[in-house]
Amino acid sequence: MGAGTSHEPSKGAEQPSAEGESAPSEPARAGGSRRFPSITRDTARPEGGGRAAPRDASAPARQWPLLSVLVAVGLGLLIVATEPFGQAFRIGLIIIGAALIAGAALRWTLPSVGMLAVRSRFTDITTYGVLGVAIVLLSLMAQPRPWLNVPFLEDAVHFTVR
Image: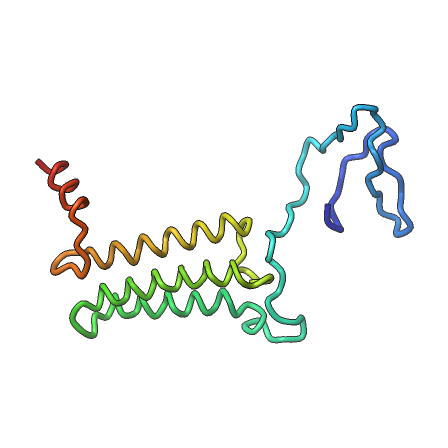
């Protein structure tokens, strides 16, 4: 449990520490089980959810992993929205998917990624990676004139449409 976590006092299960806070002691029962509070009063920060830069750095520098992913997604959305060239929707979506894949890679390699850490490391990597790969594959297979043809998917679509 982290500092600042509050617990409901149980009969003789907690002893005051030197700082004046109550710290949990060993369970009083012989079975070794611990009584958890009935009401959750605090949540733990996600693994890797610390600052990505020192405290004296500016806010954007502390959150550079999240900002880099958001800037890339914003660029992709801008390309999709403005359509400055042919097949711009496809390029924009590939940029968005690549940004999510890069977010998964950052979450995997860096020990502290700031606000890019939302859940556990495994869940974040899986979510960012699967969504990024799905967006890239779907943008490559989008009609008209797909850049990637997957025969069994075409058969599945024809089977469901008939």
